[in-house]
Image (cartoon, rainbow, N blue to C red; front, side, top):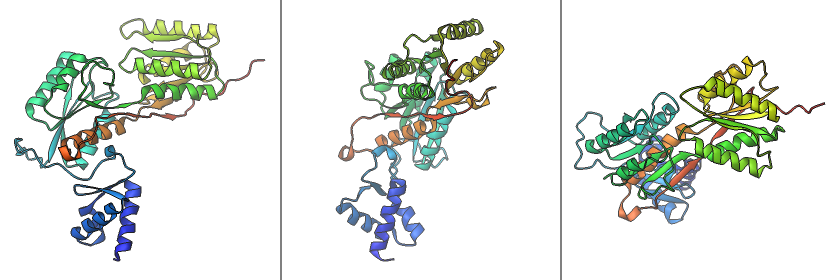
Length: 367
């Protein structure tokens, strides 16, 4: 193949994928890896790509898009476990059964693609168990740690992570304003913008008074911030009912009272978190003889089971799989980095998406 043609094919692959492995490309094209490396050097000299160990990345690609190189095993780490992995990531999540499975899957998929393996720890939303799991993984000598803390302000755990001897990425939690954890990186869903997406969708349908009913979770403060900001920016009625639902008692009664407040105040739409509660919310609305979306439009947040509600729910979905993928990539890059190719600490937020279903509709003008 003529060099010009090879260069065109290399650049085309970078435009599509953002990264290129020299050995994989050479095998696919039936040419030597040395020829590909020479081509990459020539193209790098022209400034149209950036060389990395084992291949290249597009000059328009951020480091977290993933580089094809892999780190060598740490010389002090036992690699005789039979896995053949070049590195190990420890992953601690509060609950592997709801919300986090897609994050875990994203971490596992990306780590496996990079030649590593994942060791999972579950905290069950117990701070003491969370620290125990982190300490266990540190003692096991993992190469990097990915941790979702039980609560947003888990300062004791963040301080422990801040002194960990390996790279750490905090997942689905913000550490930017924390008093500890300055050495940590983070990847999370932009829940503030997710709430804004929900409110804007309802506003575009003509709803001017939009309420909010949420469970008190680590996500709730960010959702409230995004909701308040969207209401203010869109000039919506600021006095629509807002309810934080207790998770210990009186959920049904509290929900009924909130719905009655919506009816009394002329509220025509509600933003609800979480998905599980949104399903119960729909059941309560229909039990009260009301119709969704005719009497009340509803947008859920999480999109785990929203489509399975009695009335399939329009829902905002945090990019959970991508959060896992980017967190694994970020940690891998920090493991691979050297003093010569170091880079600034990163705090990444990823935008949620909206799936429109049967629970939202345009406001019907009154007589």
